[in-house]
Image 1 (tube, rainbow, N blue to C red):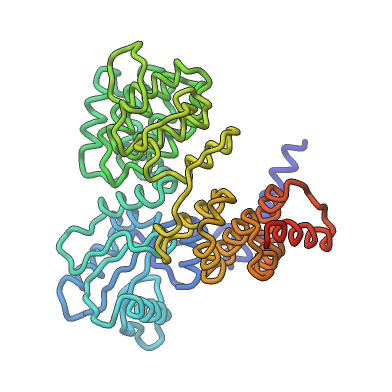
Image 2 (cartoon, rainbow, N blue to C red):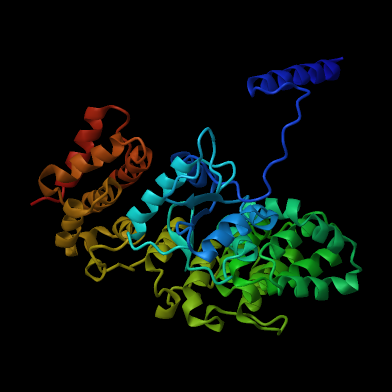
Length: 485
């Protein structure tokens, strides 16, 4: 009875929704247009891209006296192939003209669109990219607005396969979901292939022109339970095109974050990623190393990383490429592996990741004398460079570089960075005329930074003064002045 009541309630709700949409429950909606579904509202479209992690496509189609512009507008943009390839995007068309005749409600050049919107989008595009408008032109932006791809004129480079590939690159989870829908035939075909053909056929498919090939094979993998077939599919993914590699990361993530659950498959994923894209292999290997509990299991990962086939050999950090040694060193510290906790290590094991390695040593209860020279950091360096450097400085290092830290406190553009400088000066017991305490209090009062700032300050104080504001101010002031002369 409960199930029946639920079904009846759901049916009633569906009727209400249809009625609110101005549709009778019996009214059939017209089939959707096969081509690109242009975003009608610029502001809502950009918000959607950011909130859903979708790439943004700008199609500049502004010269209606030019053949390629008209061919794109009247053929390609209205085709099912371009429509399917852009379903994962937030697409905008840019055109300065009005195409609505007397009494017409929508644009005749871009069906289902509105002329006012493609005019507004063009104004935005020219304000960002300049008034020297080249049309046709296609620009793909990442959800945060960074340019991922730009092609002026139309030479056949921009086509559904390229759009699919950039969807795999920018929005891998959306690409995976799209592939399950629009590559259903390929998914079913690979699911039925004999094991002995699987590797060859999958490698051939991945080496082709389908921008959703890797995402399609991941759909096959998700419904495959036989260990040998899974292994064949994972190994075949080493042939994934560079642009599509990001779609492999979510699939590999569970294995490298829980490496002991399926150790053989974890090693397969690491090997595959090393061959498909070396930085992705380093990403996978480091995360597995941190989480593996036995030294023997970590040895297997390091041998794979070093490209060694000598089973039983004891690999070391020096067996890895020099520019990858810092990543392994940091991971082995966090794993509390004896190779990571050696008292004397090569400078090549730290180069470029000094802050992260200092953080790792603190995390496992070890101290380090590594100190970043703030004078080597440019004024305009990214927050990701400045903040860890300031937070990792010892009191002695702060006092030795007091002028540079004080400059950071005064000149940094964001509160987050000024708080990091203030915490460093607190650690060095340099009050800076009271500015240090004022900045830390501002950080504690901030909605975003508050909790972390307070925790970091209490760690420096060595004792929590409690929630009383006056007690906190007194504790900060006393500590910072304790070293003032």
